[in-house]
Image 1 (cartoon, rainbow, N blue to C red):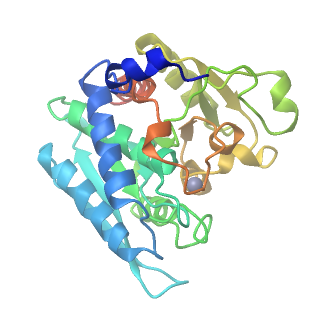
Image 2 (image 1 turned 30 degrees about the vertical axis):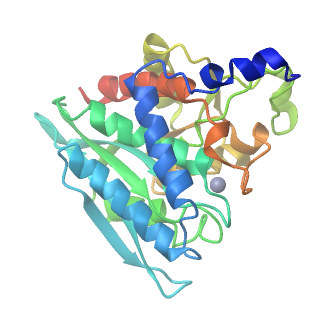
Length: 309
Ligand SMILES: [Zn+2]
């Protein structure tokens, strides 16, 4: 696009973010705190990590929840980490549990707007929208520590510790919904890439949300995509595959739940198959589309309603 004088004249109007609803506005607020004011939040940046934890707890509590924690000592570094949990106890079937989760840590020096502030924003907004909803089953909103390297797929990964605890307690997690990088969209042709042959079967424009599962979670994927589509304008591309065959579907916290035999799916903007800013300092808040993220909230809210009511 070429900048013209007309653009300059109208700049004060056109540069203002246009939020289509309260949800989009709330998402923008959350992201400005997490990925602009706080920024880097990981073991190499412990003060950012602490601020992010306090912010998430504060938001859960502001919406009327108790912010529970699972604190654990890491094997690989001398630090404690914590998963943060807000729960709506089921009214009639509290032993059946639905988990929705997103990791709040960031990789290296990135401020983590798309990865994974966007997903934390959606998680917190869903917690707000559910605050007065009674569900038959138990619904847990979980913010996970340590998804990023060097902890990914190790015993120090937050979601792994959490899923392991659930298994040890013999909890019936009926479904886990993983939110991973859900804020970057493009209407440009050929803006979407894929691992190997998948590119022949899926859209080449990066304006959709992907929903993926392993083979055992396929029914959950089918039910969830149907719920999502009934409530959201966001286009979906769904994929189920053996986790051993398509590594790309294993790259977030749903993997930890699969490891303990739970059914889980991931909602994602496809991350590095689409965004050029993946894991760089350029993963900043201006790159996000808050109105499209609001569509993700609409669809995901319906998934949770259909699973937990
Ligand atoms: Zn990442």
